[in-house]
Length: 343
Image 1 (cartoon, helix red, strand yellow):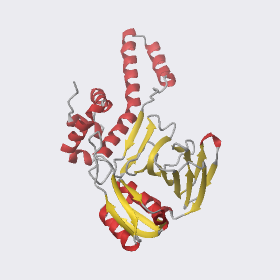
Image 2 (tube, rainbow, N blue to C red):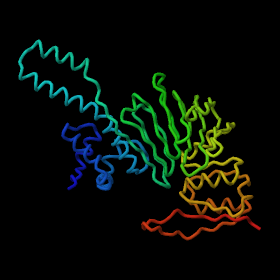
Image 3 (cartoon, rainbow, N blue to C red):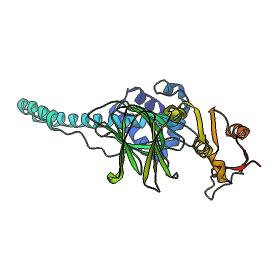
Image 4 (cartoon, one colour):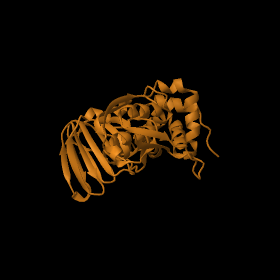
């Protein structure tokens, strides 16, 4: 039987006003995946009590849940250490030998290692949404639609992120601990900078765009190493197992985090790829020549129907929205838009 979710205890934890018993209870709620809907309901019903304590301008339940998970992971080592100290004092009080007590206290603080915690924290951005995240070291960023990242609870000692999808990072400097973003084909190593990484599993390329600072892109098994400068884009082709670097305006590749889609003389194939990510739709081009058409535009919070209509006004295309089909699991499949060459 599931524990009932008490929003008052949840809110006290968010404010940092909680007991050891409260911490255990909240941790148990989050460890049980069956509680996720109940947690969202509790937060939604008492939104104004929670929204003041968390970042984000929009009513984003997923973001609040992610930040609570990060808070649990951050506080767990402290709680475990307190429990060790409490157990020690209970035993020492029974002995009643002051010299031994003093020596034991000294030994506890000098020799007790921090608890080893190997659990992972995962932050997920739903399809058709953007998610703002904060990391324990002060770094922050945005996850694009349908993307996810993972990191270990010992992140402050080993600043390594696993990324699937697209994310923009603003990394807090730490010369003693490099920040590493791992993808299936390469990793990006930095000390403090702003950059964008796109590594979708269903796409043929992985892209790294540097906005500020310096980054080092390393291929797995030592296949390549590339040092990047601001306003450069490194594109790795999975099939060719090679990469190219070019000068770009980095701001247009990170504008998605600000609610903008910016295109500057880009081929329609690239335009449709980024629009597809943004709106969680799939484009089918009936003529490969369409992909070569160059396009320039800026879209802000437009509906997908309006975006495609505006593109068709200047590009030689016609389009049609296919009827959405339901899969065997009862979930509607991704929306498909067919693009044809205008005759």
